[in-house]
Length: 98
Image (cartoon, rainbow, N blue to C red; front, top):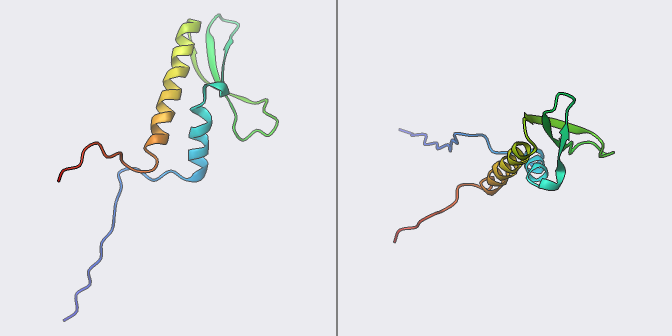
């Protein structure tokens, strides 16, 4: 009798590809962001399009009532993508037992 034994590893989230990681690196740098004031008085956060070779296309993300709120939104986005980059190589070991 022959038995077939096969294993597979499953992940709850798909692994990011190189383009996704490059995007995360781009938006995790605060220098790629800006805040513009709209005609209605709101402030809009935007990041520089990483695929634009001329570096003059901005992608709008959020609108806030104050400039402080807009900057806080950018800081939150930068922190979010920095964490995604940190975990893109796999889980972080926090404790090992012997």
